[in-house]
Amino acid sequence: MEDLSLHILDIAENATNAGATLVEIFIREDTGKNLLEIVIRDNGSGMNQQMLERVRDPFVTTRKTRRLGLGLPLLEQATREAGGNLTIASEPDRGTEVTATFRANHIDRKPLGDMGSTMISLIVGSPEVDFVYESDLDGEKTRLDTREIRAEMGSATAINDPALLQLIRNLFKKDQQN
Ligand SMILES: Nc1ncnc2c1ncn2[C@@H]1O[C@H](COP(=O)(O)OP(=O)(O)OP(=O)(O)O)[C@@H](O)[C@H]1O
Ligand SMILES: [Mg+2]
Image (cartoon, rainbow, N blue to C red; front, side, top):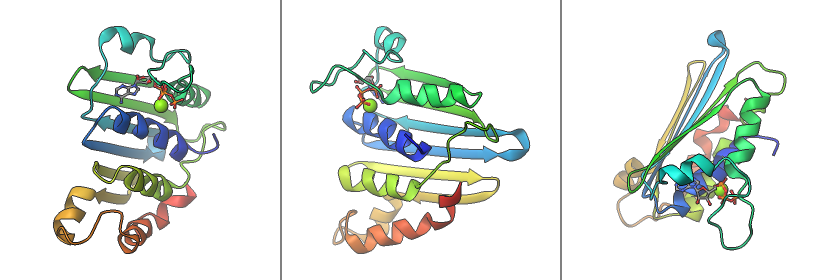
């Protein structure tokens, strides 16, 4: 995977697969501290201690369609290659929080990529789920909260309405170079 945005899509899909009704994505880049931190938090089914201990293993999955589960192992590999690490906190029936850190200027640190497309894919794929996105890239801030959008639009407009998706996409234009 070329871009972190695709890893983030994978991890957020784990959350929607786990029955989350709210998925929050926080991204903070602080070049001064040479740190990029990505947090993906959900209120889904969570994992018990036994699952949590095994989940970085690519042969651990609860998928029915194939025997490999690569989302978490590949993100962990991407963090390691860029001088960072992956931590996973989870509690059954409460939810899960995945934190990936990177050395921001590491030669092998993947670019953030197109977070607009990731958010659109998530919203279109799971219109019943709410998503929060907050990024602070050296002070350049982007914020999206589908709960607020729903409240403003009223029930007449679906969250995956094409015009609305275009508005959401426009929020992300400035993120795409990272
Ligand atoms: N947010 C989460 N909430 C609950 N369970 C999770 C969560 N994230 C991962 N899991 C559990 O960990 C397993 C491994 O996740 P991982 O993303 O590595 O692979 P996968 O989702 O099974 O397959 P792939 O990502 O390759 O499609 C999942 O099958 C699921 O059982
Ligand atoms: Mg996955």
